[in-house]
Length: 296
Image (cartoon, rainbow, N blue to C red):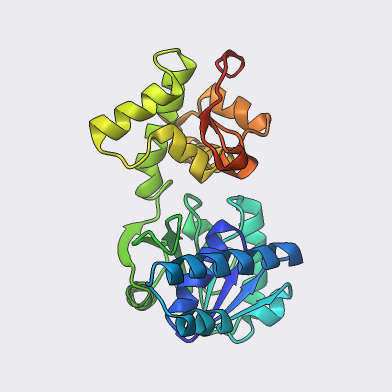
């Protein structure tokens, strides 16, 4: 594992590129949007500056990490010499299947293909490639440079050898890999999303307000942030997409997304990324903004 390609320059993609570069891997960060790539490098630089200010790294460390990252919008070029490709595109099944078909065509036969998907079946993704034994899930947590966990998801055909390589590679990143099998939501989101959904239902049904729900979970259950604030942090559209996967995969009504969540996504209230969700994030503030209009 020397040459790493990361597909997608959003929040997860730039975080994944960051941690690989910090550990000395050569990274190509690929995205169809040139502006997204520019923003990604700006974000990585800003995060490195924050680490430098806290004296966690040196100026030399920062320079070396940035020098390890190359950007491109040419997918074929990005993967042609890759040992490992990590896809971190939007949580959309059809998009991921198309990306993996293309990666499979362009990447060398030796390359391992990983997805950062938070819920979509690795077996399904692998089925569109000619190397299902080399397709695996690497579900990093947000923010990637900070969070230790990497959920390693084995598809139906993922080989023992590939699983061991990815487990070892994750450890080299300073992460703690946990191996799980390929079922809807894996472990992290199979447990987390029903909790978030139930919190939204509690708001929808008028049991308590946003701040009250989050306070109960923070002070009563020792969670670092409440489920509604966490939903904003993840992105309400992402939460909805994961719940849809769980609902479709298990056919159990307990996974049905709350109507309030659907309405907020439809209205473009996606959380921190859109500046509004259960809280407001304008000007760096966090305020309770949920009104009666969102409760029906």
